Amino acid sequence: MTENTPQQVPFGPGDFAENPEPRVACLLLLDRSGSMQGSPIAELNAGVDMFKSELLSDEIAQKRAEVAVISFGPVKTESDFQLASNFFPPQLEAGSDTPMGEAIKTGLQLVEGRKGLYKSRGIAYYRPWVFLITDGAPTDDWGEAARLVKEGEASHSFAFFAIGVGGANMEILKQISVREPLKLQGTKFREFFLWLSKSMKSVSRSTPGEGVKLEPPHGWAEV
Amino acid sequence: MNWKTALASAIGTSHAQLGVPCQDSCSAVVRSLPDGSSVLVAVVADGAGSAAAGGYGARIANETVQGVIETWLINHPTDVPDDLTTRRWLAQVREVLADQALVRKLGPYDLACTMLLAVMARRYSVYVQIGDGAIAAGTGGVLTTATWPQVGEYANETRFLTDDDAIEAAQISCSLDVAREVALFTDGLQYLALCYDIKAVHQPFFEPMLKVLRTSKPEDCSLLCEQLAHALSSARINSVTDDDKTIVLATSIDSGQDA
Image 1: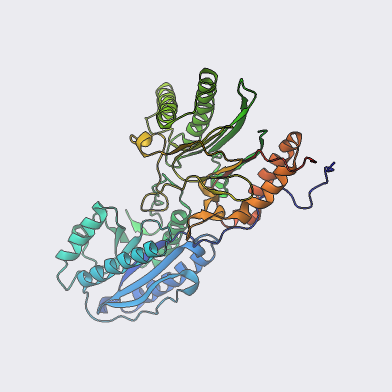
Image 2 (image 1 turned 60 degrees about the vertical axis):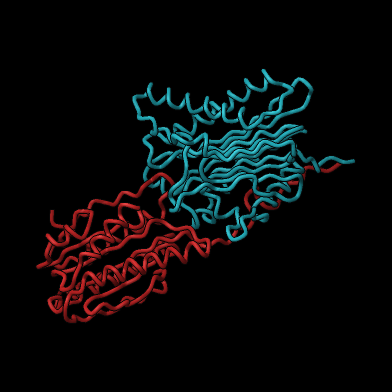
């Protein structure tokens, strides 16, 4: 007769399977044209630093949120998609012109490539986000880029947001971005990146059917 | 077959922080047939986060499907349920959800939830899934996937019982293969309990629990449920998922008895 011996270990699950975490890719398209010289680019760099540390401070976001940075002009892929722990914010210096069209096209290709990698490795992923931050107007042909953004939004391939800073041409941004572009108050990059990291934390936690709601852009956007 | 069950739901930290109740619902009922055999009916349902009353939908779906199957078993004590029968059960649950939405002046998708269902009899097993989470079953020792999480392109997209095409899209398996153990769990646990690279069950997740359940007496099961609920709320689990977590475990193996 087997006695009812007390369990040594409380009743519960054993070892966990090791699966890759689902990923949320966030691409930053950052304007470092001549007009960003001085305080704007310094604040932008500080904001990106803060973005990394905010993501690292969240137990789940640090395992799921991947960041890539493309700066322009000229267009340069500063870093490909990485989890926060492997993301080293580029210290951007103001350059020359504003080839926004090319930057957007390069960026969207990078995003599609990342999704392809996720699919080939059986890694689950959320809809990627693209944030364009610019203080000017495109100095190149942006028609194709605008078309790609519209197509991508219509097919739910990504969510594209445009943020105008300083003297940014908001009219052109309205034609590139399907979603209403937002204007940054002054150089409140830190506030913007704090908001973005909160939004990333929400996305990386979102469960089925939740169609992530972004927090209202208080504290950094001009209304 | 005498079924022993342990089941529990635990709220996810993200819902707890927002003051939102757990959106999962589960049940495991053992019913007797006139021939003296038992049938286990196990249900897990997970309310959609975006739905206004997803958690409520999950509870209604859970209770309703138990009632629908109880009635069917009474009226068909010797029949084996087939694909059509199962889809009829689902249709009845959907009707109740639609009625409840009307009564509460909600939209038709406001009670959206996923559903996992296992009906385990002496002569047949039925597994049904709409949405994510999964069902694993086995004949003793090893569990295999009876269903797999249904997801869209993105990790936070899945199917719901209230979707227009839910009945067509449901994963349904009705067979004369009999399993003696089963586990149903919601998506909060799917990355911990399944190996995605080989699309298989991660045995070590379940084995310690099944081992105990096999040697437990039926009267021990409520204590096991308490311990399970506690385990699902542990820091160990909450550090890797902030979603609601629900699991139903059942075994008809009794290795606690002497020969």
